[in-house]
Length: 210
Length: 247
Image (tube, rainbow over the protein chains, first blue to last red):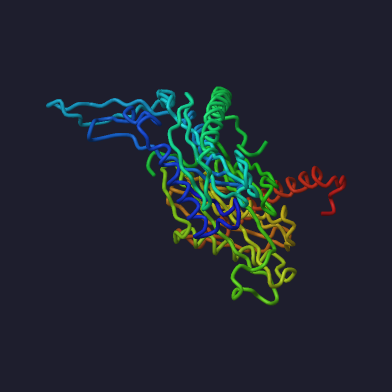
């Protein structure tokens, strides 16, 4: 994950790298999970060759709640991702020798995203809890809970961040809120991503130029 | 590169343009609310975002100048910007060099005497690279500076040029850059025809320099025309000045 200095002058140089590393680490804990992504489907030749999936996130504008924004963007990008079809040619002794990647751009398949989580961050500000904190709310926050939720409402990960503390009785409510919101977010993002995918892959206009 | 015809007998390049034609330019100002000025610039498939913050207090006191503003520039390339993913650090030597060149270009164009003891930050981010990256960065930065209301001597418009089969090619893309011919990047102040950036790191016979430079300068004027129109439309839309021909 990269924090562009364009997002905020606070992200120039080393400070930006610190924020990026923290968030990368948090998100890798959410995604590096057996049920999150169907990793066995990325295997080509067992113990020898496999696909590597790189997820690069670039923050252009900082308005608070980076982790949730990035996890939603990641979901949308993964919906758009396609893996080219391969053919493994085997040698004389049955050992795989050559891998042919299909040249046809339409000869590809999408990823299996049934278990993919999104994060919902709940931030404790004084005695109440807010979801999707803005910059000012984050500055007043005591602590936050980052909950990874998948489409079935199952909690995939939980991390407490921040230097304050969270009361135990509030935690259950926070997780319940996160579960409800997480499911809704996944279905909304997927609906929009599928729609624009079907739309026009190359409309000829720039993505920010409307 | 063998097998690629950079200039067909009919005079068409690999993407169907003529030798003197620049790529399709689309630009928009004021894309970010938080930055004082911002712009996105697309030249063909090359997409660049520029943000400007300032003038504000100098971050490092010792670097403050008593009679003019300090220009700070940071240039970064996204890992996903080129065909092959390449994670580049911000302090990569090439990035630092380009940052320095952009900074010096704008030191010549910004009226720094109007903001003494302060700092102006220019951040350029390359989102998609297909040749002419530095030129697109400079053009985007010009629009961002205008959006931020920073006084400039003139627009800074930039364009690249190459040379293939005795013909100068304007606004070369990534494929044409790899043709191992010259790759000249030029930035000018269009109204005074002054060169503020002149960069070439390839070989070219000095007899061809005049023609390639003229081609690049013509390209710069073409880009300037588009940027000027964009700025006027932006002002009409946001400020409501109906007669903006005096700007």
